[in-house]
Image 1 (cartoon, chains in turn brown, yellow):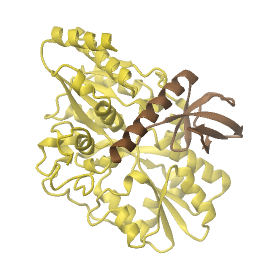
Image 2 (cartoon, chains in turn green, orange):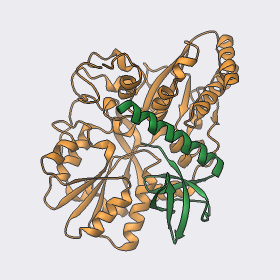
Image 3 (tube, helix red, strand yellow):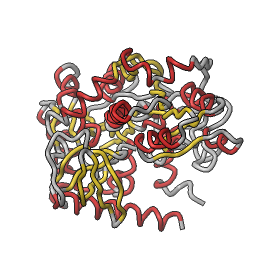
Image 4 (cartoon, chains in turn orange, yellow):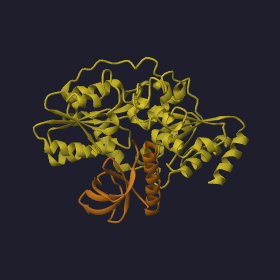
Length: 78
Length: 355
């Protein structure tokens, strides 16, 4: 439940950003973010809020890990 | 990775006795199983699962209260999906929904706020569960509600905080832990300082840990190094997402809206100052204060040892109900409900109980 997913910022308007995770886009809030972020940056997103800026390299690694988990989960339930 | 495993073996040889480690966070419990970490490490390392699954520790009374709210006229209860199947004293939110209560599953408290904007004639109550990773987002949502002028939105706070729960474990007689694998994303928010008492007051080791196999192995190595050298500390392994100071902006918003209160943890009991309630000045959002929902205390199901499992005093397979009367399809205790609960993780990954 405390999982936060790295997401790439596609656009920013005021305190809301559109992010991309595995091709899905959604609006998230930047209200909790300490750092300034720009389009193209990666942030950790939990429950609709960015909670930390992260490096792209780490974001890609983590997304790959979660993808493996999701696939394993799908296989297990089939 | 082989080098880390070798180092862990060497450290265990030099320590020369079994070592009890606790992963506090439910996501780590699942990750340890998923990566097969128990299988590749020396037997002397004993993993205990801790209280870091918000679904598992939300007391029956809070579930009953959420159900009562959902059944009130002109109310919609919004909740995270994980809470839907948690057994209350008589039924779960899922059952209440099947009976006609208006319960909506949301991904974010912001989605609940959106429901309020779209349903002006109804009252929307968000069932606010979760640890420090989540409570700042609820504070952020209330900030937003104020800004856009919504007046039919409320929260029922069952939020809890991790450091007081760790302190309660360290104070209890039947739990012996030498090292904590500390939560990653709770720590993204609070940083490492709130855990310093673990080393300074209790002489116990701890490492804030990420979620991939190498993160967890590295954290175990760091814990064993601390234990072998007799120098307990709070270290950050998960540096990619956790800073010593955490996220000060999120913490300050959380503290602006919420204050600590004594809270009941399902199966554990009351832990001083381990819950969060809205401060008086934000009473206009507080469903608990405004709607006077009077729900009696409830007892845990008979024979369920969820409380001992959450504290790491027992493991799921010690329970007489495990895999028999209590399964993920028909859970008795909350630890079997959440996919991140210790019992559900044992059931799913131990292999023994799968038909």
